[in-house]
Amino acid sequence: KSPSDVKPLPSPDTDVPLSSVEIKNP
Image (cartoon, rainbow, N blue to C red):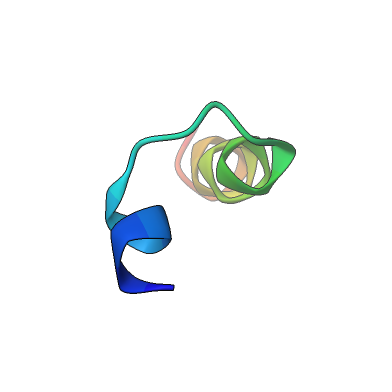
């Protein structure tokens, strides 16, 4: 779980928080 979380995998989970941040900080 540690190496997986550290690896920058192009998963939808990473796109979710990124979108949330952009929406909160336009």
